Image 1 (cartoon, rainbow, N blue to C red):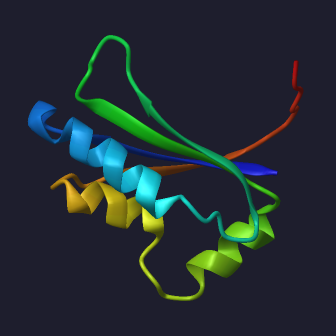
Image 2: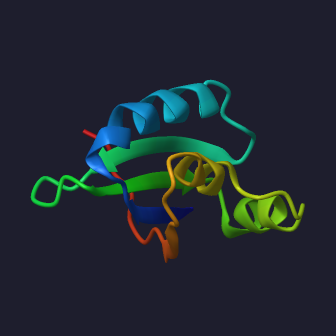
Image 3: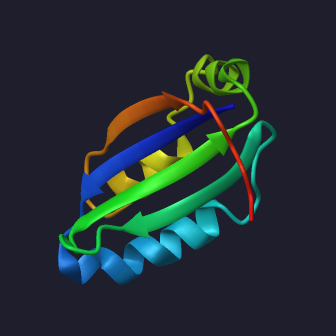
Length: 96
C-alpha cells in the first residue's frame, strides 16, 4: 500500500467550503483507494491535508496516468489553494 498526502494552506474563510467540497468530491471513492481523510493541523489551522491510502503504487500510477487532474488537487484549487504532493510507502499497517 501507499499513502498520498496533499498539503495546502487554506484561508480561514474558505475552511467550511473546503469541508463541503471534500465531502461532495469523495462521496464515491474510486477503485484503488482504501480510505481518505481531510485533516487540519492542530497548531496551524490554515494547514490542511488530504491523506489517501491506496491499494498499491500501481493503483495510484494508473489514476495519475489518465491525465485527469486528481480529485484532491481539484478540491484544494476550488478554494484557491495550491497543494504539494507527498507519496509514502506504507511499511506497516495495523488497525485497533
